[in-house]
Amino acid sequence: MVVPHHASGARAARHRLAAELAEAVSAAVLADLVAVLAELVGNAVRHADPLPGGVVRVAWRLRTTPEGAQVRLQVTDGGAGGGPRIRPADADAADGRGLHIVSGLASRWGVERDGLGQSVWADFDPVPDRPGLLTAG
Image (cartoon, rainbow, N blue to C red; front, side):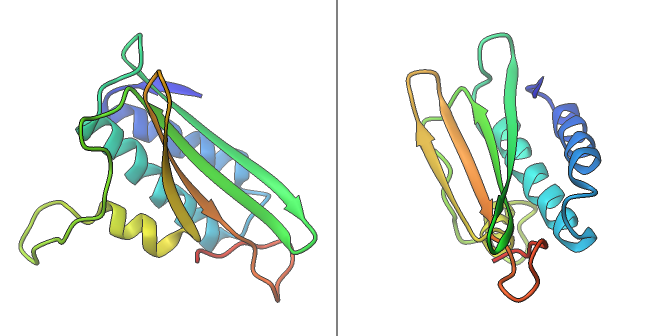
């Protein structure tokens, strides 16, 4: 989906993700997915340029594996000079914890760059002992 390069874009993406995956994953995993998506879109809006047209592209893929469901979230923006990285967050800081949240909830995350901009992705692997449900890594 395409959302505005604006705070309202995160809200639209969260609502659509929740509606589309509500039946596919547990409520706890859905909460983690929504939290991570909100962080990724929020970071794109705050720290990166928009794609042409003033937008951010948001995508997710649900894949069934023998171990259960796997989800990949991906947010593509126009890129930023330094790119996303985890940085130390001062206890009194108002921000700086977003990628710590992503890293703590997702199984893994990373960044891919191309001629258009950058995509930040986060993978959620299935729970080995509870097929069909996901947990955050």
